[in-house]
Image (spheres, rainbow over the protein chains, first blue to last red):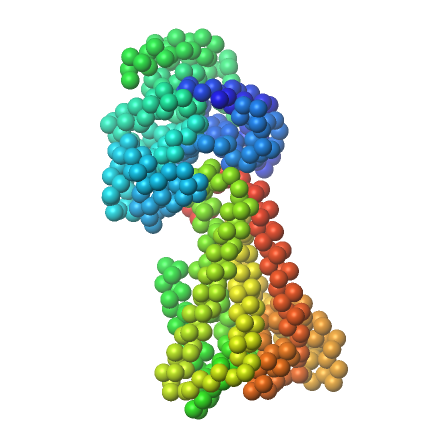
Length: 243
Length: 272
């Protein structure tokens, strides 16, 4: 499975949000999406998923075109920073409501997804009463519960404690081994260092190579022992040792 | 909170209706009750129109409860709902069917409440010949109106927020009611020996169609009730008008949900 992003641009109220983006994502790889706040990371994830229409260019899944052959990217799991679930329902019921949209999975799969992220499926508390970390975990559970072929994760380790961060990193690696395409937007350099096979640096809606921030990022990555090669590097050997 | 407000408003509505029923001593025809529930004794002077606006609270309560029924999916969990939703048109139509269903249930609850209050007041309800026909017309017209206004609130909320959209649609309804006052002074109907032209003008105002007592066909059905005012609207015209409005609002909704970019996750909190 391959996602190809070809000359994608998007403007919102005359502001250029995405500027002539060209990218390629392949199965079984984790792509680290990095950049400053407001650089366009989340917007790129929204465009890739089909939640947002693009003004120019096209996004292809194999030989099919998004918004032409299908309205949203099929078989995706997504987490977006600040987007929550229904606060008046329990975690389990939230996932049940979402699972009902496509009717692909039942209660057992929902329970298993919750247990995978370290939540109790029988917890009777509503999501409103969840801690920030628990809210983050339930959002990750909804993303992985249907075993999607594509995962778009926006800051998945935010608000998590050390154990939670480890749990989520393990999940990302498990999903990668399962063959999913994973795009991971994160400010957490360790997440990117440990998990990403390739790094994409975005600035003002443009994919950047050669800017000060990009070179700085490369420098920091090298300090972590990242084997840099034109922004792309195969790190599967290191990951296999770590996970 | 909204449910609590509605719980207060619905009994208030029953109270308002029961106030009109107390005029009957020992027995009342079902057609009377239906006509009372649909503003039977309405005239185009401002005293009556004020009462019309107050009694509309019962229907605006439905707008308040179900004005977020579809829109709530565009709030906090929008990303997770629409990333799974491959056919927004079908999804929207299903939500619309739910609103129609709840509209019918709401109308039934209100009518049941009115009947119970009537019986508690020891007034015997007699089912007259045209009552069932009248009941069907009442349900059709009011359910369509509830549908039109509620879907309108849901669509507007996608572009503004739930409070603003509710205020806009309720405001439009109240403005339309007050505009009926023009037919008392500027374009008189009741005191006009030839009111046909003015009645035709009034037909553009949808609120006029909610007053079953202004439909001449209704009185052919309810043979126990006499027509009060010199205003006659054909019920077929009302049905076509409301069905066209409902179709237009549904098409607008389909276009809106399909074009909607899930960028702002929650208009209520400003979350992105």
